[in-house]
Image 1: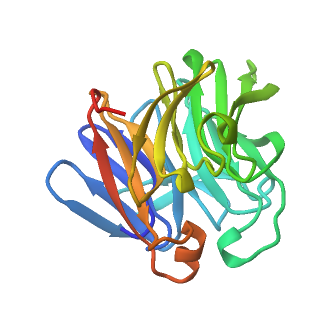
Image 2: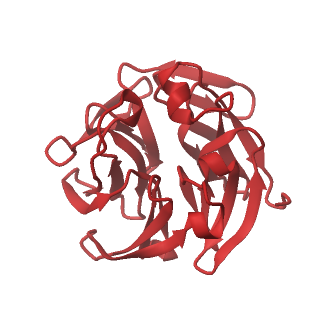
Length: 270
């Protein structure tokens, strides 16, 4: 695995995007299987009816998995300015997708990112703007709140989800530099019963954060945690990047990045 993004658990199998290698990894408890793709998928999500959709980075669309690739589902080209990142959905089948604004690993100049709302019938609108490299996404509070990781700002930002799916009442959920580590930069996140799990990259830890602050912290050693998800049994799946001591962006640019998946049991010690 080169770069593990968008891990999702469904029907006994873990699915992981690998945008750098160009494909999808699946593991149903025996061995990893790789399906190469013509287009780079990033964020993944399973719709309420069990269908898998993927955020196709460069094509600025959400694709529907057909067993060998991602076919047509929703065109985001009219509202997305940069590559697509993570993706999360609600109980009704609506989706939220990161437009990260620019390709940092290609040396593009920074631009504000945005969040795109996709209705179940495939209509896309801008739900929030002026985000500093929006990354991981999670919906909490029984569908009432969306949390986004702003990587360069070192914070988690929360929005209230309106009845029409738009995002309102923007507010700080957690300042990671203050409550975790001065160098903590959030990447992937996932919803938990009592907050969100956050992959903190250069802080080398996955942290469970509630509004009251950090609740648990799990070290990933020399590896940098990139993305995470919870299985139905409470196990935490984390994709961890092996960068040789540098940053993930440097390892991607130098084509030296390798990744693996670590699994933490519900009772894992911090």
